[in-house]
Length: 201
Image (cartoon, rainbow, N blue to C red):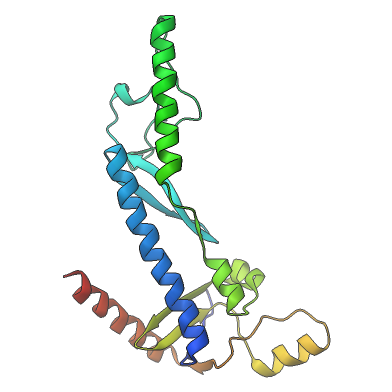
């Protein structure tokens, strides 16, 4: 974000929304660990502009995996193929066994792979324009009963009310938000990181 605006919010509603997002994110990451245990390798936690989702599995580059898995990416992660790729010259029985094993892997993946986690769902609940989030970016976290926000665009309660009443587009407004300095935001973020370090020690 080239230009950032910082806000905090101590109202129970917005704080609960942010805390719920991170609670679900922790559950999502735990589910990725469980998924990896079923396949013998760490699963890449992936993120795009709107969501978190499961990536490939960290497996060796050995050709023994090529039947069921795509070639590893630059980080060593492999994605499960849509269909198995039997070795050339395999017998009919061998191809049938490979297809059966592949279906087992697909079923196992579908059973244990967590659903993607949409951050936009939570921005919408906070009544922030997700189009602005897509174009300009946004970060949220909560610490000690306060939600903090860094946005690449400004929000204003007065502008939001005026534009909403006139039927015009609005950047949105987080009820109870107060604009703060960058240093106050960074102080909250530093405290949050220290809290997590202690929790994970």
